Image (cartoon, rainbow, N blue to C red):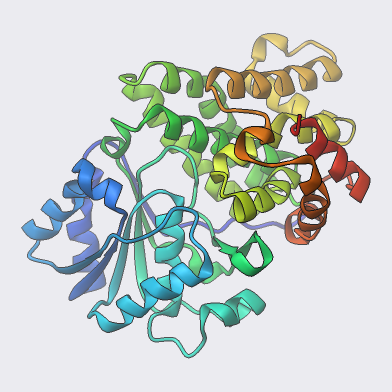
Amino acid sequence: MAVCQAKMPSCVYAGEGCIANIKDILHKENAKSVLVFTDRGIEKSGILRLLTDELDAAGAVYTVFDDLKAEPAYTDVEQVLEEAQKAEGDFVIAMGGGSVMDAAKLVSLLKGASYTIRDLLKDPALAGKQLHSAMIPTTCGTGAEATCNAIVAIPEEETKKGIVNDAMIPDYVLLDPRTIAKLPKTIVAATGVDALAHVVECYTSKKATMLSDTYALEGAKLIFGNIRKAYLNPEDSEAKSAMMLGAYYGGVAITASGTTAVHALSYPLGGKYHIAHGVSNAILFAHVMEYNLEACRDQLAGLCDVIAPQLYGEDKSVKARYVIDQIADIVKVTEIPTDLGAFGVKKEDLDFLVTAGSQQKRLLVNNRRELSLEDIRNIYMKVLR
């Protein structure tokens, strides 16, 4: 049995009302002033008050940064950091989706540091934790609250890149289902399918371990079993809570294993065409897993045993096909467009996509079946009609 490890936040709170624990966290950290990162949508919706009411009750001094862009470029993070450098702050709290949390995690590594984000794009190993952090996700999908990654767009290259360093793993996580009670259906869909991709990719990854498999399988059980209900029944709080927990498990699995070709080929779609990350994953998801089928049959069958135990006695090929069909059906039920043409992508863009996708070596090396340039082209062609 190979030696493996899993790294995750040191303290996780889950359950309705758990944001109240922020008072104890600040006391434990002896935090004198707090940097709060969010976005204007969270603030306007009133969700931010779940946090600020607790901070006010604790008498905490805090500064709110709410001008964070979705799918940020590294230059956007530079602008946020410039403002954060001017503010007093010895603890970071993020309340938002993956973009907010990734930006906050980067600030926790960059505030007061001698290196820059441009340095980290070249050599992520330079980073060290400057400030401790707490993450409060407001979607049911990205898993950013658990990962050692931060994804940023590189405008000059029209793609995205992950900055990966263990120091990025947050210190605290608060999974409070009140933050997603009124989450729009489109966000449930995009972030939910993103979370689904995390658990499936991590379980089928070359780097999967017995530890990452534990989290990926439990996450798969929660997400496959609840994503349709969470999307179709906005008032189903149990389904949404299950999605939030499944997304967290997916984040832990990422840190212990890693995503594969679905995420690799989706990065150029976000970087150049600004397609939301979860949507770009959804478009490619079933097609990539179809390509991977011959190399991942055992793993897909293992997933089937968890999500559809009634098929336990079936042939592995039948079970693997069932999982891929379920992925395609979930994308259909959640009404995510599956034609890149709907987002302005043209067939003459194929050369760019193939080249940019093939350069995502950090993720492609995890894929159990190697992809040639022609294989990548064929996958993109399936979603470019």
